[in-house]
Image 1 (cartoon, rainbow, N blue to C red):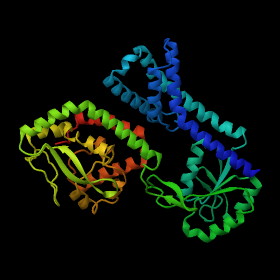
Image 2: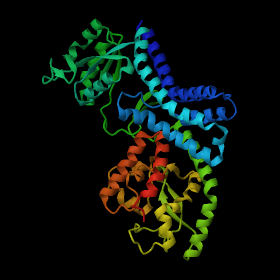
Image 3: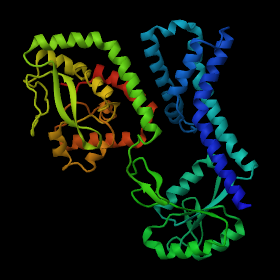
Image 4: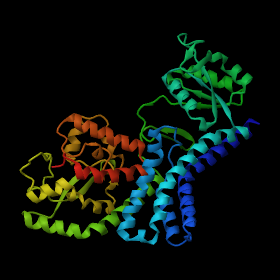
Length: 460
């Protein structure tokens, strides 16, 4: 019986994951079809192409709680980011003219409302469905420490999991038979097996440190007489995991605590989006780049392009292109960062740096594969060697390709980093980007970059 229930739960978890994955694109496309029908438009031709693009750009988020902040973060913000991308390319290519204006406006406004309704419906109904089909499960946690309490909070907050948390088992006298937050201490670890048998507990989470190995082994041996599923909650670097995942090496389980987000399919999606966006942008701005090249050539002596060695993926050297904005082309063991009113900056170069137009050749780096549209900004090799000794975790940023723009830059950390504290702040944002990456996150950074460039005062 327990085996069939566990199989059922695994199947439903897969179904739940698929529902969450396809919910947003399905709602957006269904709304588009409904709006087209309402306005007497056939859902074919341009509408099918638009539906395909929306499916590609619309990715799953969390099921939101009933708060304004979560509504913005999980529904409105991502949706209007997608809309902004569609409008940019639709206007540039003239594709928007294929649709009635009132139909497009109705679709844009109706979709987030229906998305929110669909998310709320799923959050309320799926736990009941799981319960109806016999897969609602009970759970206990071994270890009422910080890690155990953190897990308990997550189990209780997310009703979508369909898990009923019963309480803790712990041997420490300080918490015995008392209360830990909202979770009761059910008894000492020696009583766990009997409790599991008597109460048909489905899940046991072990949140003890590895130093408790003898106790854990004895407990696991006792639990062989039950049908409960047992999980270990690793206590390594729990507050600083970067793209954590579980893998195996020929059957031996391993836990990743620091990994690139662009693993497997994510890497393919990231590369395809880079190729698409950079190709479109280069086509659109090629006349502007030609004009800038002429301006650089005739405004000051020296090459049009400035080439500098920087660290790329996995700390490998890459050559980054920029329009030359200075009277010098430094690429040695010591490089002085540009400062305000820097005499090395040419008059035309000052304009390029202020508007970030000097960065346009880096879209060629993206096509070549050495850079990405969004990622940690590449630093000169000399600066890397300096700051890797001063800032903890500095080199983690090189687990992904460097970007033309990044999460740090749109949060005010653009331009000169004249102190170790400023560089440490930049690295903190870079690592945060690695930890929370998604394609929608990339699109939001791209849009925010345009706003930052217009009003930024830190570029010189």
